[in-house]
Length: 132
Image (cartoon, rainbow, N blue to C red; front, side, top):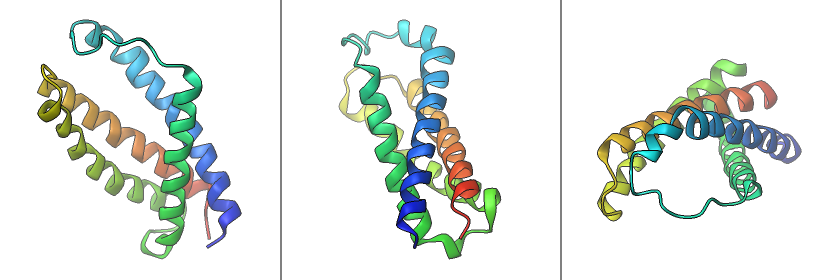
C-alpha cells in the first residue's frame, strides 16, 4: 500500500464528498429540512464539515487501498467499492428514527440515498487517483 497516494486521494475524495453533500443536503434537500422540526439546532461552521469529510475520505482511501486487489482497475473499481460502502451507510441511516424523537423515516430514505450517491462519488475519485 502506498500511504502517500492513499492520504492524498483521501483528502481529495473527502473534499469532493463534502461538496457533493453540500449540493445534496444544502441545495436539493434544503426546503425539505425546513418542513421538519427535527432540525432546530444552530448551524455548524463550514470548516467542521470539510474536516469530517476529509477524515471520512482518508479512512475510506486507506480501506480502499488495503483491499485494492478486490476491485477492478480504475474508476470502475472505485465505483464498485463506493457502491458497497454506500450500501452499508444506506442502512445506517435508519438508526436516526430509532434514537431521535420525531425523526421521519422519509428522511432516513433520503439520507440513505445521499450516502449511497456520495459513497459512489468518493469511490470514483479514489479509483481514479489510487490506481496501483
